[in-house]
Image 1 (cartoon, rainbow, N blue to C red):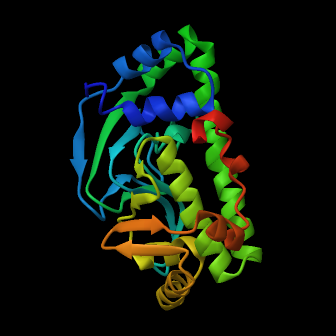
Image 2 (image 1 turned 90 degrees about the horizontal axis):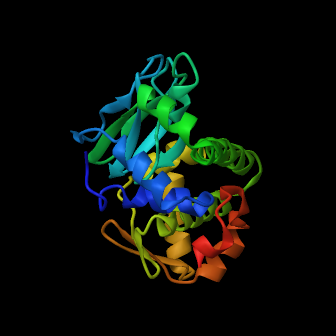
Length: 245
C-alpha cells in the first residue's frame, strides 16, 4: 500500500468535493493496493473490459478516450493524480471506453470488494465518490459545448484553465506554473482540432502574453485574460470555494 504522501492528491480532491473525516480518509487509503508503473501509450483500462478493481492514478497524465474503426481517437477527459480513472467500472458491467497513459504513470488498485465494505460503512464517502463520477460527466458536457460552440482559441484557453484549476486542487501547481506533459496532438484529439491548428492557437495565446511555456512547464502569465478568452467558470467542477483559494 502506498504511503500517505502518495495518496495525498486523492485525499485533497475528495476534501475539495465535500467534507471528509480523518477516519474516512484513513479508511479509503487503507484499501489502496500495491503500485505499478504504466508506460506511455499503454492502456491502463481497455474498452469493453470488466475490471475487478478501480484504478487510482498516483502520478502522471492519462486520458479517457474512444477509438474509431478508422483509428482516429477522441479524448474525452484528461486524468491527473488523484483521479479514480475507471470508477464507472464499479457500477457498470463493462467499460465503454479506454484509459491510456499519456506519460509514465504510477497507478494502484482499489478492489471492488473493498469498495463494497467501505461504502457500506461510510455513506458520506459513497456520496463523495458519486459526486466525483458526476463531475466527470459535467466535464464531458462542458467539453461538448466547447467543441460545438467555442472558437479554437476559446476552447484551448478553457482546457488550460480547467487543467490549472484541477491540478491546483490536488497540489500540483506552483503559483501559476504547472507541468503539462501532453502533446499538441493530445490537445487536438481532445478539442476536435488539428495539431497544426492547436500549434497556431497556442502561439496566439503566447503572443497575447496570456501563457508561456518552458519545455513541459506551462505558466499562466495573465490568468484574468486567459479566463476571459475561455469564458471560464469553474463551477462545473463542483469544488468547494475555499478549496480553490
